[in-house]
Length: 81
Image (tube, rainbow, N blue to C red; front, side):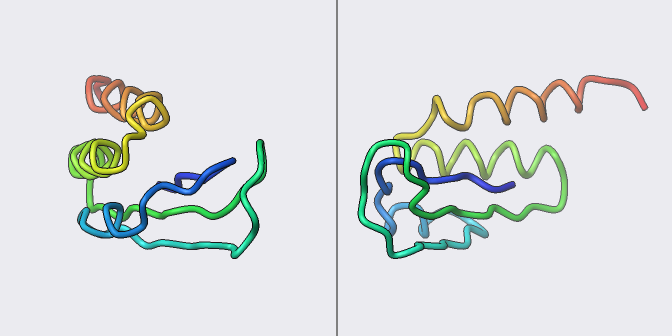
């Protein structure tokens, strides 16, 4: 999963304490609606991704940003193959 940092960067150190998070800072000056960087989160399964995204979101205070992706992953887990 990739999470974009728009307008303001979250705390890098907090983000990197989460499992399998890779940080990308574009070195741009912060301003409204400007993409400043992103993080990628790696996981081997949807269930693991839900856990990692939730952990990252709590660490950096971006629960609202991550909620739609987490809900989509949960729905996918609940859908029979």
